[in-house]
Length: 169
Image 1: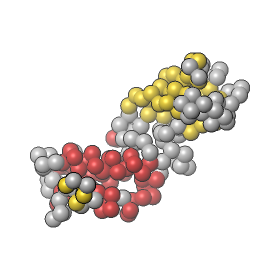
Image 2 (image 1 turned 180 degrees about the vertical axis):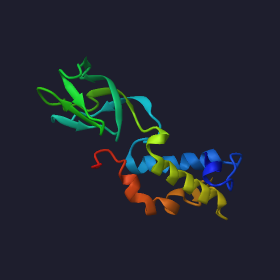
Image 3 (image 1 turned 60 degrees about the horizontal axis):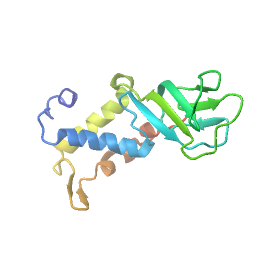
């Protein structure tokens, strides 16, 4: 994918290419607080907030398969509803106030073809890192040479912030 995106300037066999991709994806994850790319199933332990609505640490829910509150399984539509933007709404009451009082099993994230602008940002960034005279960042003890975030996140903050849970789409 990187090779075709860069017109062959960055071959798939480039040393540490996967590390560079992982570094860019990780930098995005640190900014928005969740993985964003690739739909996956997760079980989230969620602190209750004592309110009717709670925002999960995800910006895109595909499906919720189970919600438990204080270890009691809840029923979709009777006890709660969910939105694709990451919100869970408690019906007929409020969520627990207990830390880790909710467990949510869900599928969330975007497939690669749903976020071409984000994939393009990552591929452009990886291409720049590899072609750069500094090259792919390297860790030596506590020091990191060629900081990934400082190179490209600052200029793309608005696009990346779009994927933060609770942002208005």
